[in-house]
Length: 92
Image (cartoon, rainbow, N blue to C red):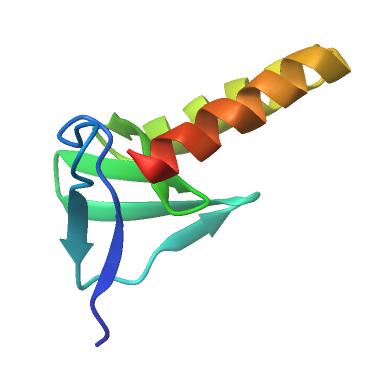
């Protein structure tokens, strides 16, 4: 099984990017990946960045559904700032 890595924004600093390293296959849901770390922790990953953690896969799917419904309310300007925020998290 391949080792996957994605950015851990909670531990990353301005000068150093920290990564989660996992050996599990992600569960794909909409345009997100869900990684089950253990029975009480799952990570939601978008474009190589962990954006949230939830207790289980169903909690992750519910969170993604909320994010997706909010996306429909965003203006073009809001979408630009969301994109910039994701880009910033990638850089650290």
